[in-house]
Amino acid sequence: MSMRQHIAIFTTASLPWLTGTAVNPLFRAAYLAKSGERDVTLVIPWLSLKDQELVYPNKITFDSPSEQESYVYRWLEERIDFRPKFGIKFYPGKFSKEMRSILPVGDLTKCIPDEEADIAVLEEPEHLNWYHHGRKWKNKFRRVIGIVHTNYLEYVRREKNGQLLAFFLKYANTWVTRIYCHKIIRLSAATQELPRSIVCNVHGVNPKFLKIGKEKLEQLQRGRWHSQRVDLYGSGEDSDEVRREAEKLSLAVKVHPGRDHADPLFHDYKVFLNPSTTDVVCTTTAEALAMGKIVICANHPSNDFFKQFPNCHIYNNEDEFVKLTLDALSGQPEPLTDEQSMSSHGKPPLRDSSMPRS
Image (cartoon, rainbow, N blue to C red; front, side):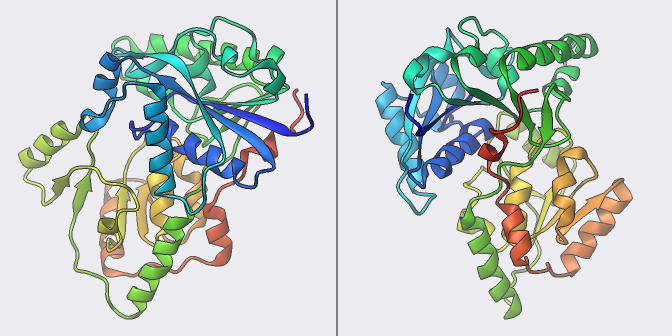
């Protein structure tokens, strides 16, 4: 094997499904390959047409992997200021309606030739390995790093017999990650404790959001912040139910379809409310802080990283939520310092690739 570093990033989803494990690994591949000092390959699932129709929004489908590959590159190029230098490969996947997830089919390790097998980054290592039957990852790759995105135990507990299912899933996750990974990076403390794991935010945000924040700060200093209003955006599978509940409760909230997070439509909002307690990495919170907005969120392990930012206001109960929201609406956000802007970028995952295996 050559001395040049080869990195293969395996993930559980792909665009146009705008889920975290489709978007964040894509940007990770782009920025790891940006310098040209290493070879990077992003390995994503290829779905049958039937499954594409179930998963992908707005009736978007692809006749071939090359067609989807072009879509992914085009989407990315519209959001970064450099040309992507990484490759894309596909593995066969199948969408599970029961688990609402894409599951790998076959041996994923075969996607990378032996002579290029150097470092493997497994986005959601437990998910990728629940049904893995093939070569052992650590036997093929010199270093295997798992990045845990999702609090699966929390989701499973909500199902029928949830506590029992969570008990078995906890041990299954521990077992497969211990067998297949040298090191685990948990994006927040909201995830399951796993062997050889650390908590480290390696995501950060696109620099575009920091640029938006600087522009809005200039407008704020000129007194050009728009009037107060409350809007909710989203096009997930529960969006219709959310809309019905809002109408039933006669809430003064407008529900809109989802938009790109950097859409100019969002630039003029001053306050971002994120009461979620099932999130792990809270990407939207990071993006809102980078844009210079005030964020109201729960006192929860997933939000620990954001407590360092003065514009992040944490509540412990309903009364505090109301008070903090009213204060935010009547106040003004503080500008990000240079140090806080660097924190928003997160930490590079390769820094952890040289960690001891034990």
